[in-house]
Length: 257
Picture (tube, rainbow, N blue to C red):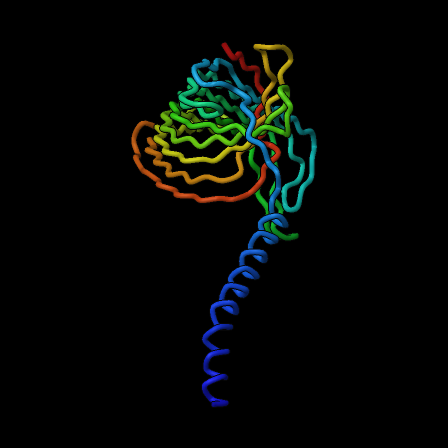
């Protein structure tokens, strides 16, 4: 009789126990969802159907006079690097755009005098050397915007692009006589994939100031050289990087229409 009563109690209370356990689990999951609920609301910064037109630019110049750095002594020379990049894009959906960018880069460096001292007995001097190059790049990119709260003036964006570049460079070493002058002509082909985050700040409803910096990328570069119009050679380099370079900072003006 006692066993029959215990069996009846087990059959009666077992569903209640299961229901109570399930209810406790539901309450725990509900509590967890409330605990991790961030209440982030999606707001549109740039609506679908708009056009983006603008340009970025970068300029760097250096000049040295009797400068000393490590093994380099009596370094005198100058140089510059100029980069301009117009672009156009279309917003296929809210805060997402695809577009094209065209970049022109020109650089020049000149060493009037430089002494490289390896030790007290071994040293050599470089004089009258200069190099100039220019490269054209064509880039296809995608850009996604992230709003800062409910702000309609400031936002972050991330740009992913793939580009091809073609360029030419010329380097010359001037000797004491014209016959001692040597020159090297190079043809450059370059393939790049890069990730560039940035920030945009609207000046008015249609004009914005953009700041962008490259942090990650992959590049493959081929260089075909001809020295003194006689000797030929080639070089290929591959590079992958993940770093923040403040010297790759690009500042530009953009129009959203």
